[in-house]
Length: 319
Image (cartoon, rainbow, N blue to C red; front, side):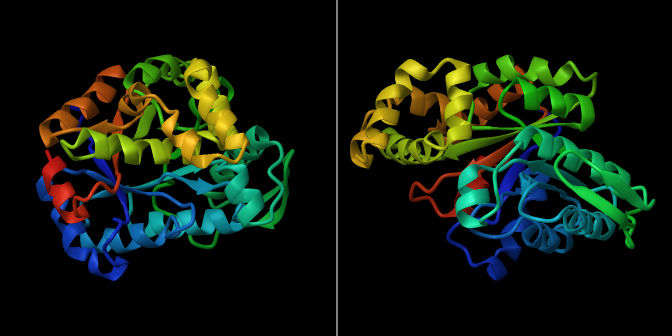
């Protein structure tokens, strides 16, 4: 097993203010990292700030903070503040997010995603030095910004990446990549693009886990999650690129026709089994290890709700 073993926070079903005891228990259970997600629930930084105090040995990471939804200077300040509060323990994951989050929910044009992430990484590198930044990038311009709180160690930057262009960007200009919604075999497809940027790149992956031996329940929950993600254009393009067009086309057709029920039902069990880890705890841990053997250096468990309380699932999946 890799030396790193992460889990996604905050946990579903537990009020954020009441998650302290669970997070405090993570190091003793073998977890080394906590990684936040930002979509429609908690923001990316607050749960990590709490965790930095509740469990001071944990590494903290955003998976991800969208490049569009904060101004460049604001994003730099958020990252620098957490890096200063937890020196050497924070990793900034940035990415495009999706058109749903950026355009529909935040009313921001979702244009030039590759260039936006590239420019954001370049700006952050410059800002973290504490030097004044005056630069016209392709997707935005910064005039005279100087970070007032310079972290003692600039945080590593990982880029959320799906297809080859962004994967190569993650390896070339960042410290590695964050992967999402893929199988261990898919990792073998995408990891080489990251390593084109040089050795020692971190490859983190959010791995969806349903810790239950009730395969029918696990697959039902998995299919709802798959339908919700794979109908978003960026994820559809990703799985077309990975070669799943034939098996997912019936879902896409039904979804486009407005038939959500048929869309979910049309997802083959085999796809649910490939993309979501489920089964007894020991089997789940073995499947997470399969991602590591395929090239993931930081596995990040993302719990799916299958009737197992989050606090119990954390214990069951611990190392």
